[in-house]
Length: 463
Image 1 (spheres, helix red, strand yellow):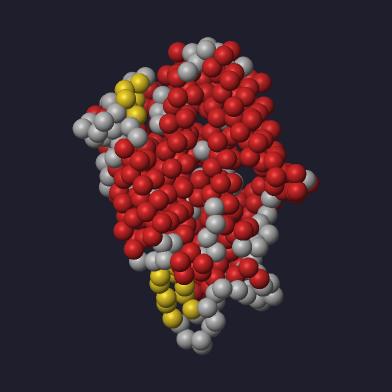
Image 2 (tube, one colour):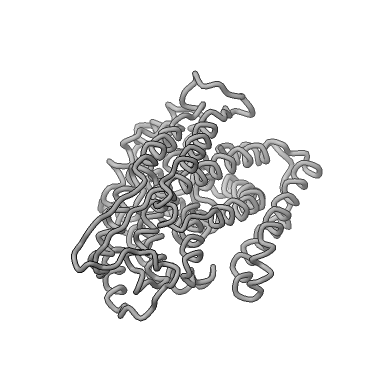
């Protein structure tokens, strides 16, 4: 895991500013490639992402002589790729179909159920389990905004109540934040975010007159005039539970697990081996009708795995430089809950939200002479029982809210976002570009809610 960015940044040779160019280039290509040179991008995005990632990796290894950051990044990426791939395969063999007349109210009910489910099987698990039935339900009125509100609600905001919900919260849990801390302190902002997003979705969806038909979804069962529910692939539920349960097999929490100790962290491949084995059993024994009904193929997961390889390694300099700037004594007085909310959120939207959470947790704790490597210090920070009092609890709330909610701001803020986008596009939905997503949806719909939550929860402390 990428828990020690600040310490590593201080211990290693400074990273020059020009090293953020590969990351900016990759993000620009992700944003513009499908629009301006779609054929070239479709056939070469894997080579481009891997080449840019390896270029940054080579600079760290052979110019900076830094092996610590790449090893932490590789471990984080491997865990990310294995979990996402395993969940994708398991969910691909589970066919859920809601045979009903798609209405705004039913759509809102479905994403609201997904928001609750995300806290038990994670935003990734809930997204992969529900996105296909959600698209089938709306097969004759499916439009990009529906997928994007699904990303806002199910793939991000929904997972705010438990450490299982979203990767940043799980990082906090394994560092010492109590399991039920999120439910106790974040329920009202979670409820506020979900309700407001659902209301927005309802009124936008009411304008949909059903004038767009997605031909690739013709495997949806015909509407019988009454609400029916069908389910295939029950055996995959067991393997899905194994994959999710294996998340807890972290050597930094369970000392008995075989592990390698390196640079302050413990690395073990037990979790990943179990998840990959469960995924293999899922695919080998999946219900063929379920796979066919989901039009299962590996293209969406391969796109995510290759692009995020480039993103993880090219964003190393960006994370390290931001840590160096923010940890400077000159900025210590500016580290308030308001600053942490907007700084964590801004980076979580355009970088990966899990290491961003770890970065700012470490930064906030360092201000009060607490260490994120100490479980007891983290517990004091979360409980507001340190010498700083309740200020630390408020700061942790700000970091947690921002890392989860802002993860929906772009396609790359959280892993499930790009996965849902890829699945939708493979079904024929013309999803907006990177900047189209931000300008047409995140800013007008998501940003006002983020501002309201900041004002009432972080700034005024109404909840």
